[in-house]
Amino acid sequence: MAQKDRHKDRTIPIDFTFYDALNEIPKKDRCSVVLISCGNATIKINNSIRLLNSPCVMCISHYDNIELISSDHLSAKAFHFDPHFIKACLCFDNLEDSVEIEPEYAYDREKLYMFTKHHKSFHGIFSLTPQNYIHINELLLMIGAETFSQSDTFWTCRIRRMLLRLINYIFDLYVDQRKLKFFEPVASNTNEATICAEYIHAHYAEDINLNTLCELVSLNRTSLTNRFKEQFFCTCMEYLLNYRLKISQELLANTNMSIDEIALSCGFNYTSYFVKQFSAKLGITPSAYRKAPLSYSAYDGKPIKEL
Image (tube, helix red, strand yellow):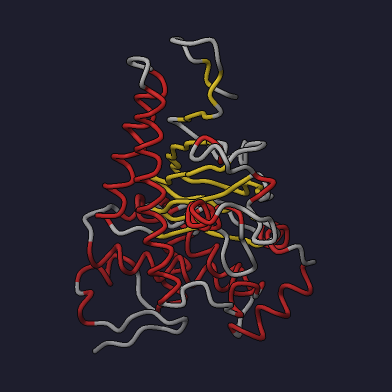
């Protein structure tokens, strides 16, 4: 939805969302900068499964097809804009190289490719360092504040200036990560077993069952189980249990959380079941392990050994 200018009789093709749930993106006829500030989400973007772990930023456009699969403690903000808000000569119809454009605007068009030219191994998603996050978050907050306050007749000029700074900053990340070949095709990106394993790593504390994983990668139970066994030598549910127990071992050794709290945080609904599985798989009770964690080896799916 475009912003109505309260100083002039016009609408501006921009919009800002302070609390974006990722369930209404992309916006029609818009490019969007989406900053994931907290938590994580699993999305299907252009038929590829991607895990969004904070902090990260997405540069997307209405060419993308995005479906939110799940989220956990998600906090995101987003700024949506029509390309011609940046330069009057730019629009979705002339963002392709095949369309002639004045040479002085070619570089501005190229910077929008990270929004519009997505492919199998690049979907406009960038992981951020704390320094990256602070800078992008600061610019987005200023853009959002000006979008809603429209402090004077020059409010759109200020937003455009800040937006260009934001795009230039993310474009530098894009160029750097391209040099490091972050976006080279990687087989694991489309490997169903790996996708499920990564999903388990991000959502092990949640209620995960085989049907959840089958829906995630669009395979039936038998096909997914066979592919998972070929790669990880166990079933999906065995992998999930082992991963939960591995995390619980780390929590027992490095936190003051109670056994009940650890069981719940690792996805076990009942402490008794957690204790039973921990004892059976690791060969020692959680309480006994906690007394001397440095005396035992790390859990790798087999009973741990005393060092």
